[in-house]
Image (cartoon, rainbow, N blue to C red):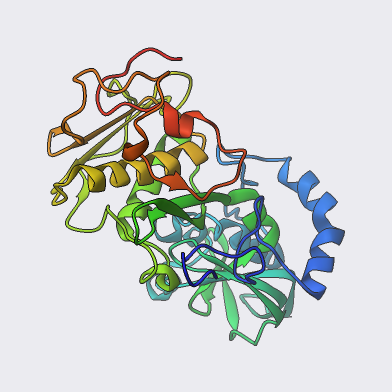
Length: 350
């Protein structure tokens, strides 16, 4: 971690690589060996997010298969892991605490003791990393400590998990297929640069991604960056509603020339430069996620910026030098991430 900027160093073991998590040591060798297989497996049954879709809990499903499908389903965090809870009895679902960081595991083996109506299993696996509840990936290595017994019972609907350890265990292949690396941007203390904060996000509907990313900006940077960056989207600022197309439509957000409209409320920032930094955080975050402009950013029902032309900055014109910070970002970042934005209105494409 760069102590001056809060930007993650390429050599930081906790820093994800440009195209995915960096895993070192013996774990890295195992991942290289499995890469071809993972790519083939990930291609077979995909959701909109690109995830391998786990099977539904089936009455005829064998306990071992059910356990593995449960692990796949834990990659979907929506509604407190609702997809995974279908594999649990109601009492187990009520008792299961899925909060906090998830452990990423590979080479999973279940050792089972079977009876006619009940199966007891222990799980053995290699740990490859952890994923925090805010989407921060950290590498790890070693054997999974015994998490405790897992028990299945036979119900009228087939085998179900009736007891399991708290926490979430993410199958590595499913993580690779389901989660995508995105980057949040926060301002540095000088207000002259924005600093990347990589996160992993699982969103099955692309039209929900912009809302998820802006929500993460509102929640702030990862803990180790809290004192090295500024967040112009800090509380009490909040989203008034989901991010939409620039014209208010709910589908095709950031696609083609549809753009994105962000409506904020409870804005306390008044000076123009801080408002421009706020916009820079949003626009760089969305642009790097391939959510394209034009961008309409309103606060408390009015355009975010004041003192600008009523029709906004023309999309083909570079903004004034004083209006934009330089950005610590890869050279391949698309030019329109900075140059093509509007405070209000949709405008014509360049």
